[in-house]
Amino acid sequence: MNARLRPEFTTVESKWVWFVSPRSRSVSSFRGGGRFGWSEREPTTIRHLARAALLLVCAICGSASGQFASPQTISARSVSGQFFVYGAPPPTFAAAAVLTNNENYLKLEPALTVVSCERIKHALAELLGGDSPWRGRIHLVLYPARSANDGETIVSERFKDGWNYRLELPDPVERRRFVRAVVQVLLLEQAGRKARDRFPEIPAWLAEGLTQQLLRANERELLLPPPRGVVNNLTLTSTVVSERRRDPLETARRILREHAPLTLAGLIWPADGQLDGPAGEAYRCSAQLFVTELLRLKDGRACLRAMLDGLATCYNWQTAFLRAFHTHFERQVDLEKWWALQLVHFTGRNPAQTWSSEDSWRKLDEVLRTPVEVRHARNELPGRAEISLAAVLREWDFSRQGQTLRAKLRGLDFVRPRVSPDLVALVDDYRRWLAAYLDKRGRPAAILPGTNRTVREALKQLDELESRREAIRPRPIPVSAAPVEADPTGSP
Image (cartoon, rainbow, N blue to C red; front, side):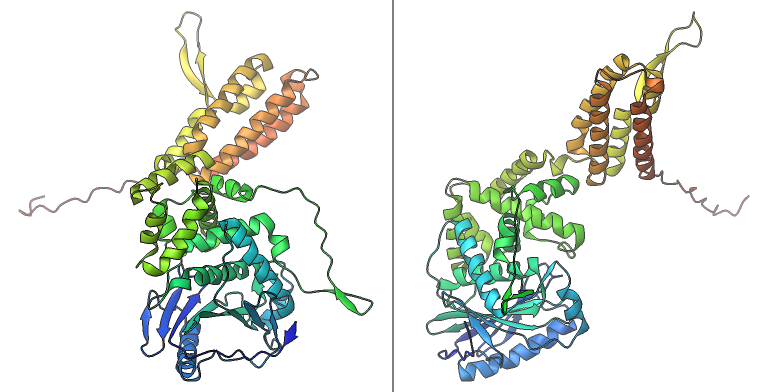
């Protein structure tokens, strides 16, 4: 498995370099081999600029020598012969040791990395419904991680017999970013089989969506950690998995109910910072749902494969997409309508009809308050007033409470699909609290509200919910006094 490899290639005709930055909304590239120039987006950090200059020099040297620069390190070759992994030199940075102990990061052992790459390739082929023979070799070059923000770089070089790829990865690397980088280069290899003068563009939503689907479906089978134990002079790692097969969209369903899912425009053109923090999770889950629903279409897998095959002959991926999915979407507006409908079915939320934070808070307040009739004297007509939920629990008997609280529960179910994302979790907590209280109070062992332990516990939980709701109450904007214009005549 382990051997020192010096791959021999024919004369280099063209070279593309892709910068996959963890904080960038798209990859950046430059082309080498005769004429050099920036295309798409330039790297945004000094580190990327320095690496670009280094790779530019390598491109010039590679054009003359006709082969990738071969690292002077031990490498491993996959069983199919498509993947070559060149191990990183011993780490000299403290960050590498810290990241190794982080469970979200993966230490890349060459012999295990090639196995993970093969598994990712087969899982991706199964997901897309096709396993055509590969044509381009993929060389993974590992380098010691300097920080958690080290990015990945993909270099694509064209030779007379096709394209070959070089993927630079920090070691250790975040597990999700490793899978995303391998998926990205596999998509480039598949789309580049027909590429000549120009190289295909892989949309961000496709790489992120497929990555999320693979990770949520079988992360444990794809990623192999390095061995940690020694038994009879053999290094072994045991992994025991005892869990039911979960829905890959389970996490996406939870996150997209708490955060607003992205519209089609947001998926196509993610804003700066869209891939960081909670916004990044919302983007990745939206992309996963988008890809999953496309694959569920009739002949959806064949359409997606046709899109990948057509990327090299189109100036943008939108053209290749509409050509491949022409039986489902004639225009982009048809795709937008279809995506909005999928979001409503999946989350019960329509982004185009979501209330603002102020309106959401006001609607929630209206649902939680209870209108009652009040008489201040026997001979007076009843007046209208509102009481809180706490007063209903303290002063009303359960037969009267039950009907009112069940109406509150229906009201919360009605407003939930339209409240702003910052109030979704609070609405859900009110719903769970009401459902649990009605269930406990409906049991035969329940006693009068004034002495019932269940009521006291429910009032305590209600106080916490009310405190949270009051903390996010919209504050009125003070109206400044209008400026007094000076009298041009100078009279008082």
